[in-house]
Image (cartoon, rainbow, N blue to C red):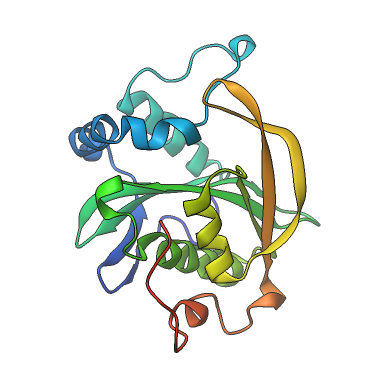
Length: 203
């Protein structure tokens, strides 16, 4: 298990915590209500990779097993305690690399409240300090304006475009790659979220 996991982080109404089996009903309702909203950005498996977990319980079992091995950190994203999305840290790598990648989504009903930038900042600060990683990467489809606003607001550095990088919505898709390094934010990313003149936003 990775250092710093499990953990719950909070700033105002925004919280991140480990996903739970008892989230199943709320998760199913969120996914049904947001199918059209999330569909264009949803990771899928190519045909040769087999079938994904067919249920929430199956997905959570896989994520929890990988979390125990220190490979991932699956967070529920909450607003005043209500489940409104997910944020997952994947590919946690140690040795001479010390990095991980991050993905996230939030329900349409809670988009535009500045929830995702705060959640990303909370988790990145945790990864770059308590956990001890050096680098966090986020890959975003060029068409995903809402996610691009998140990394732009937080000051991630774009390092290039990866062609046909991930299988999304049934096809291999290009992604823009962004990163933040520990030395980029000695005061933490939350300081950027709270900086004077910052407007609420993001997805």
